[in-house]
Image 1 (cartoon, helix red, strand yellow):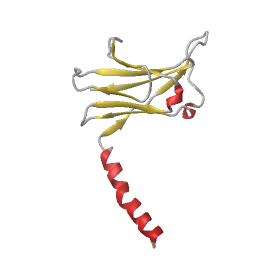
Image 2: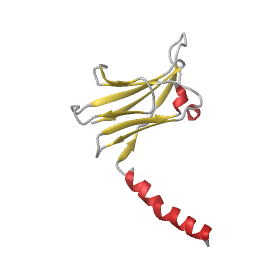
Image 3: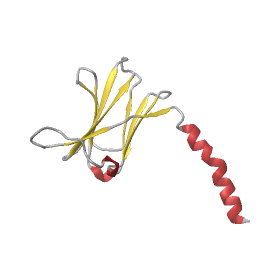
Image 4: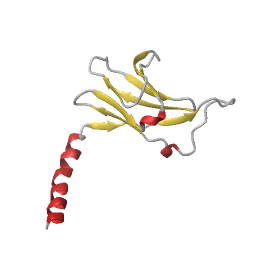
Length: 121
């Protein structure tokens, strides 16, 4: 009976987590290798890199989450490639509420690869 009640409780609270992230839009990332003489090449298996970038339109927050051992830097750049915000580590969170509308690029970088994704405000 105790197991049944525990299972019932877990099933009851699961929709709450889903509702909390309803407004978060995942950002698709493109992963590129760094330091190759003929330019950057796409990584063959980007699924090995545990990164998640989401933009919440309600709170205007852009969040970057992933394995903290990745030793990454995160920057947010505008359409003129000027840096708008920066974090020296992940997880990172950026408040985009004061930014003008336009296209912004999230750049996540470490020693061997770069991941980029675009967001339209």
